[in-house]
Image (cartoon, rainbow, N blue to C red):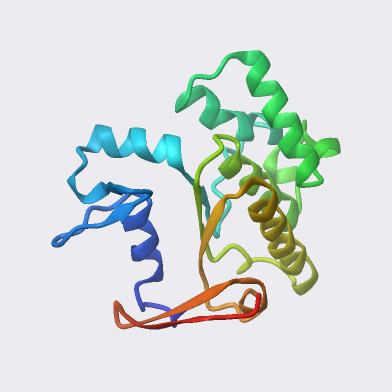
Length: 192
């Protein structure tokens, strides 16, 4: 957590191998990602990390099914049968099976976020980075999304790191770390 400009998104970009640290080292899932080449970082990211963005980042010309399928085609090159099975399971898990053929413009904000979560999980990452995942959602939808991520964490043993200033998330997480001016101000365990 932290105010706007505190470094939350930058930290996620570093953990997600989208940015490279200017000094020191950074270990993610037992790998010093600060030493990876651009190609190695992309491969590591594709196999280990999923992303949920505040603005959803869905591809407008692709259906919900195709948006979820995209990483399996472009990053992991999985066979069609395996892709279909994974996607249908995830669509069901996020409550979007009946919306699979809709384009993003036909979906509500909460539905888009559910598709984004399914897309983040389709590669079976060890870690999902969620940048302000509830910022564009009403209270009820935000709570539903938080509960869904908690369920996925428990069932699939996927770790989630949230960047947020949304206090609704606090009751659902295990540890809250506060950033101030690009520095870690402290962490505390919660009862989430």
